[in-house]
Amino acid sequence: MRPMPELPEVETVVRALRPRLIGRRFTEVRNYWPRHIDRPDLPALQRRIHGRAVNALARRGKYILLELSDGEHLIIHLRMSGHLAVVEPDAPPDKHTHTIFRLDDGRELRFRDPRKFGRVYLVTDPDEVLGKLGPEPLAVEFTVAALRELLHGRRRLLKPLLLDQQVIAGIGNIYADEALFLARLRPTRHCDTLNDADIAALHAGIQAALREGIAREGASISSYVKPDGEKGDMQNAVNVFRRTGAGCYRCGGTITRILVGQRSTHFCPGCQR
Image 1: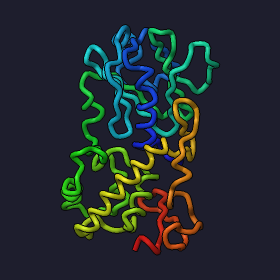
Image 2: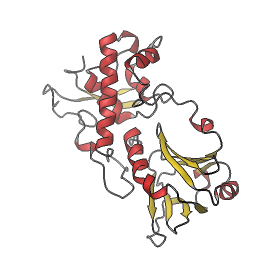
Image 3: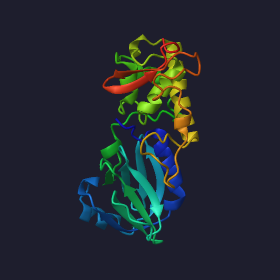
């Protein structure tokens, strides 16, 4: 399975688009793949978004959130292969661009999505879409104590737990593997076996992996590229993800791949005991 853009990739997209979209007004919406629009239907989306300005641009988990001048929210999920870019109207068309938002300066926000899994939502209350998401792992409120409380009473394996967006928002396969390596925790460990030192290490590993991913502007391992079309650099800094059979940078052991919860999982048996 191809990696889906995770928190660092989506954060990189938001930071790149923010100066290009803040203050701009939408003048038109065109759509060539109806299932791209989750809610409302296309005519309602076109009517409700027309003339609305983008007041703020943020990220929640793996979602991109545009706050509009009338209080509504345009939410976009890139899913497996989505790509957003603000381009000039005469930029060459692409057969995989399924939704286009025209801006008041003539440029267009184009949503390219070869696999057609991406989604667009226009809602008054963002919780309609985002309400079930867990906490943001880089937020000030996400402390070691907060993580300990999240883990309390759970008996799940660590890797599937980290991938559960209702537990912690934004972590996917890449950064779960990297976080567990940094924390020296086996992905098949049950979370109810962690002591306080383990939880502190997991907290530090999650935040370090995500911050590294943001600093390197995401991992271009499959289809992800930045809005300007350039690759991120995190793929050149991973410790274990997709390094099966390679040597561990820390102990020299061999990186191993297993399936955990039907997801490809990479770890170092020597470091992650």
